[in-house]
Length: 141
Image 1 (cartoon, one colour):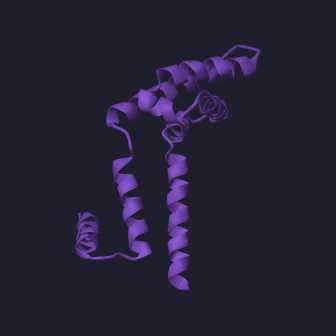
Image 2: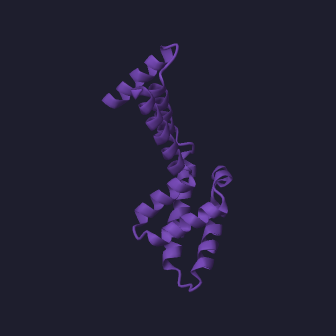
């Protein structure tokens, strides 16, 4: 509750300011990205379910043609993605996710990592980190 109040107060101050500094602006962008996530709970749950199914399938595949199994599994995964997700995550992205699923024995870790990759949250995190680093360095000069 205290963190929510602190955030709300900082946002109100930024709203009432004529201009905000780069550090405040990047903090707002990071907070909004974390709050919004860009997808509905239904879309997130759908992607997580598909990733879980793909994890089970690729880890249990008896096929000796592992490359073919990666592609087939990725196609099923990609076809099932919500339209909004499919627009930004192409088949190659799905293939890379399936490869990583094969290497991850822990289902929970696989689901979180695969879902985050397909939804673009890994890249979003890097972008937010880059902005924060830039803003912090600018503030030191």
